Image (cartoon, rainbow, N blue to C red; front, top):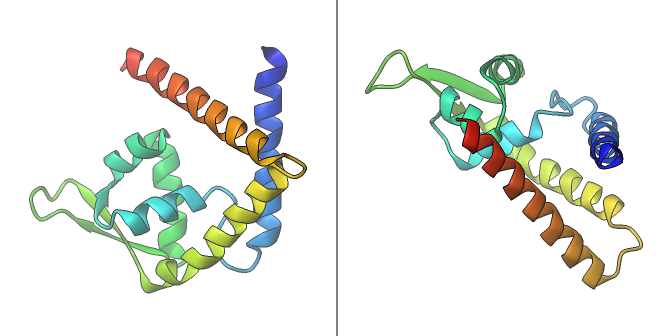
Length: 143
């Protein structure tokens, strides 16, 4: 299974390099897209909920949110019900960036499945989804 972990890592790193090139000049970093997708679809999400939704630690969320705020993609505000809770909201800039982010994600999916038949694409997607669910289940066992 070592080679499976290595392969997943290589695909991830190649994707990050590819997104860096495709998103150059936009202010969106190679690992910012999951944050922007989630925040745009869940305006007012708390930073803690963002951690849980994206399966990342608090320091990673803070780092990405700080970057996205500095670039004008999001704003933060204390929640009305609890001033200690920071909510994250998309800006017009982030909403305007969504079509490009969707395009880049679709292009990367096409790169990954180039030469696959429709049946292979469906099987690949199903197997990846099972692997994701296995990973989430294992992580949630420890929580």
